[in-house]
Length: 511
Image 1: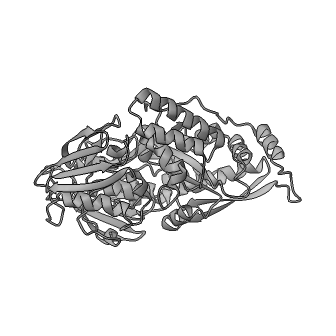
Image 2: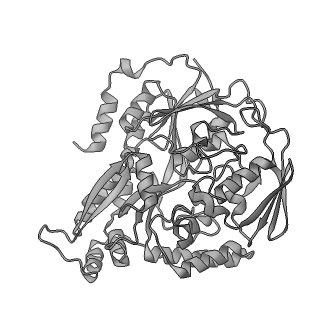
Image 3: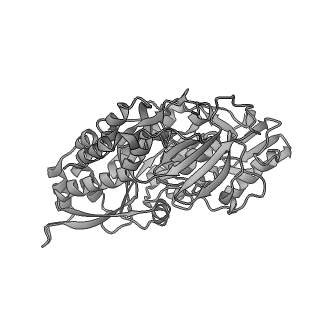
């Protein structure tokens, strides 16, 4: 029986008694997540779960709106008297959840600790343009830059970073303290994270119907997540239910399924220093061998659309005028022939290994790619690891191919430098494939400093063309952002990036 039919059968045939358990009177919302956050220090955590939860616990100097523009956050205003100086004026009366007052010295510590090695983080390169940070008084932060940086404000926004108390060191993630709408309560690795409403939050009281407490329960199995939602022992999950299960959940009166076009990009990353994959013809052959349209139809039920860039299509710097790899196994075989990879005795031209996390959707994608690549003579071995181990291997460059999603961070052109600049190889960034291209580096450096947006757009279009041709990574699709939640939750908005920020303002009715 096909996998998707099997899963639907399992869900549909569970006894009605077990599926209709009444809600307990727990004073919390249960939010199901596929894997636990790897690090809740907002200066360090890069995985989606860490960043989404950190966004609830911490504040940045600014925030990003739906149009990718920055607005006041902890900084109520700022000015830039010249291209090399930024002056932030902080809100007064802001406190961390432990009662300490948030001041300019906390901002100074947060930024400097990422720059000077106090914490080891891939985010450090995002602040490389800063020469010096000053705190002339409790409510003022002055940043002196080495050169103009068009992305610095975005990299100082909530989600990209979070302000931590002065003195916070490398063990901060054990009990993080922020100024956000929620405060940290507890964490059990690979089991749960519990947060509760922060009574000291600077935005004021949240109202009687606000969510008082959230338990992020780690449930790796998709079928179990669906069952927990059906029987009422969980309240919400975001982008974690396979498309083939959604029709069953949509038929449940106590559940609501909401979706919007997403900005999350599913992609394949290649190790460009690998003896096989350093040949661009092999990377292109892999792309030509993938039947993306079939995957979108069968695995994703058309709840995604092809991606030809890391940027969202509506972004001013997006360019779709790039090389495209529609399904063409004949072209794939031709390139492999040209690269000198002919069939061996076992019938395969080469053997490659693909690493994934334990997420069900990613493993199913890997199994599908395994079948498709076999048709052109590529034997693909799949190895799945717990999220923390998986990310460590990617950071070390210990992989040939991996599958991952860009979440949120790909909503600005700085993503190209962060992911592909030769200066952003881990631990200084996320160029995990160790890709090097001096022409691309120069384009990105010039674009990040230029004040002419039309010229920047031209540079980014050229950069996207280079990346599509050389394929250090292959962008597969933008996945719809899908939220499944109980009727008990209202005033819920779905973010294209899959953010959990709706928890700040959602209403909740406890039985």
